[in-house]
Image (tube, rainbow, N blue to C red; front, side, top):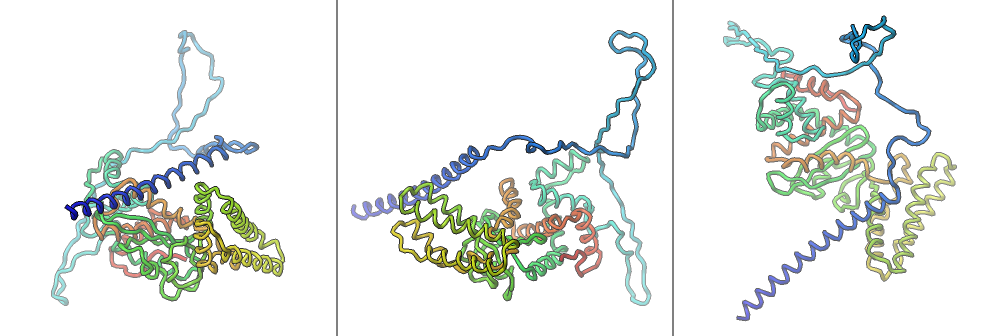
Length: 438
């Protein structure tokens, strides 16, 4: 009987713990909801451009493929005879031509070589993908729809069937993208190499599923390059594998501890710090917290303003003010607080004190990590619209294809033309990189 009571008590404690986690999650969601509503009320968005801006409309084409002339022989209302034409009302209209499937049969002749004593087959044609039933245009367009527009495979199948009458299965498209990523992996390695040589990298990670198992999608980006990787681990080993052993630049990231073991200097995201402070302020109205939280916020805002003025100020004055802000931040971090939220903030800042104001010593980098969050946003959209990946091969293909497409997009290059050229080149025997990333 006593054992049964103990077992029931353990079950009750377990249920209480689960309920506590659920309540904490609900409180966090409620905080985010209230924060969004507060921002919307304080800064309401008005439709249209700001006052004083010149109106903008769609630019009209200057060249025409067809000209259609419409005339009248009699009045459409009373059927009375009309005068001569008094003028022309001109309207230009753009439309798309319905596509159709083009089927090509490649006839490759075979020959016997007496020297080699073997049969030789003619080389592949310019647009031919060896042993593929789908052409390069379909495959590249599938990659763009999947990784740039965020469409799941079932929607891509509908687009192809509705646009040009092509019937293809979801599995066929998925397998084709996996095979394509294997051939384009040499291009992804060039992106990773360029990132490791760049002076600044923004890094972030988000949850991802592979066949229902929890994984993580990592992003390492800058203004011209983007590299993505899906891994089962969220540990520092993945970040070190991406950045390399001897990285000499600056890594911008949030306060996640895994980045501590990565080589290079760090800049911790001050937006994450301000967000945490705002979250604490929503639920803590004590006088001690309000007083010291305002001091910390003033230090952060002063540092951001100082960075924006680094080109205006004299270098001696700038360095003197940087030193003063660092002293203010250290004094705040080493203060003696009784409030639990202030203790958490001071502990974090003491731990990351040397990594919080790096952007003042290097004004060319940003004080926040918004670039990484924006670049990882497309993956979050795909995550919400699909099951993510069903296999490790699909996860690897996602990283390769997404890295190429997002990098080409950042550099303002034609995604369709560049990826098609690289894929056909590698399928037809070229092993060295075709796309070059600075």
